[in-house]
Length: 131
Image 1 (tube, rainbow, N blue to C red):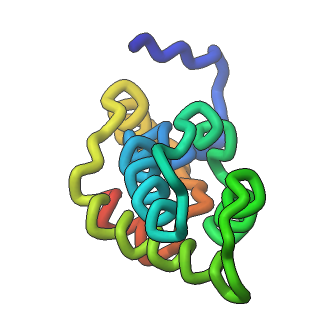
Image 2: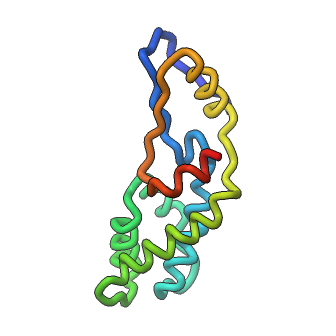
């Protein structure tokens, strides 16, 4: 992977966490696939469609998947699926790996510039991934 940073003296940098600093998306996919199967999905979650929803909050994603796949879900099912997915992802997150070119650049930039991390992940899931 080649990382092309535009020339310029930037005041600071903001990095997305999932899929940019850390390769967590395959772990999110595994967690969603498992959670949706528990919710009635017959077969694998469409991986391309999953990736097209990157960045959406878990509850909104669960509601979308229930509609898309026609899952017979009662009141509160989307919240239950989203909660199960997040708990499973937390267990899987210890297997996350750095995206070295981006993470290395962020570490170097942090020595001379303000650096922030943006994510739609739950706050309690960020610490273990960054560690």
